[in-house]
Image 1 (tube, one colour):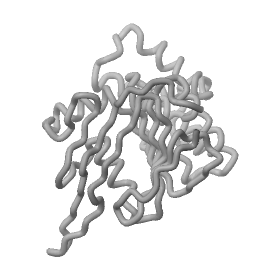
Image 2 (image 1 turned 90 degrees about the vertical axis):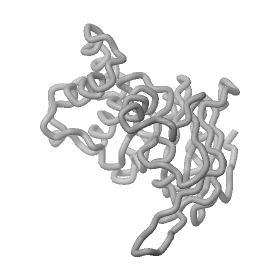
Image 3 (image 1 turned 30 degrees about the vertical axis):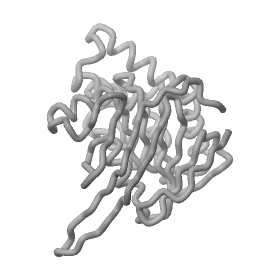
Image 4 (image 1 turned 60 degrees about the vertical axis):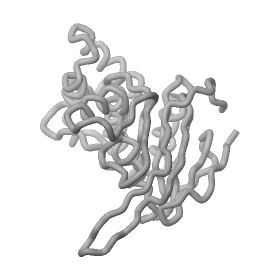
Length: 234
C-alpha cells in the first residue's frame, strides 16, 4: 500500500512532555519530531510506559507538551483555548478508544448523532442517513437501535469507529483498538482501518504489538519516550 499524496497534515517538532509527581520530574516524551502525510497509515508501537498514550494525547490535544509545537495543517494546537480546541478536535480528529467509550444509556445511532450535534458540521437533515451509511460501512447496520451493552466487543469497536467518522475528520487516531479483542475480530477491525487509509484518511494506530504483517506505511517505535525506529512498510 502506498500513500497517494505527499501532503503534510501533522507535524510534531521538538515535543517534550514532563510530569511532576511528588515533587519529582518524569519526562514521558523527549524531543519528538514526527511528520505525517495525508493518507498515511501509521503505527506507533512500544512497550507499556514507553510514551505511546502520552504521544496520542499530544496529537489529539487532550494534553499539551511542556515544550515544542504540534500543528495539524496550519493550526498550532497549543494556541487554541479549551473551548475552541474541543470544537476543533470534533471536526478534525476522530478518536477510537481501547474500551470503546460509548455512552451506555444511548443507542448506537444516538451515540453517533451526539457526536454530530456537538460540532454541527453535518446538516441536520443529512444526519440520520449518514449514521446508517457509517454503520453499513463498518458492518453493523442492523445494530443501530441497540444499546452498547447488547453488542459484542468487536461490534462495539465498529460502532466506536463509526462515531469517530461521524463528522468526516481527516485524521483517525486509535488507542490500542484491538487490545481487548480476539485475533479474528482484531483482524476485521484492522481491515477497516486499512480501508480508511486507502480512502484517503490519515490513520494513526497506537499499539504495543509490532505486527509487521499489517499494511502500515510506517512503524514508529517508542523507547523510554524517544523515537527509536521508523520503518517504512512499502
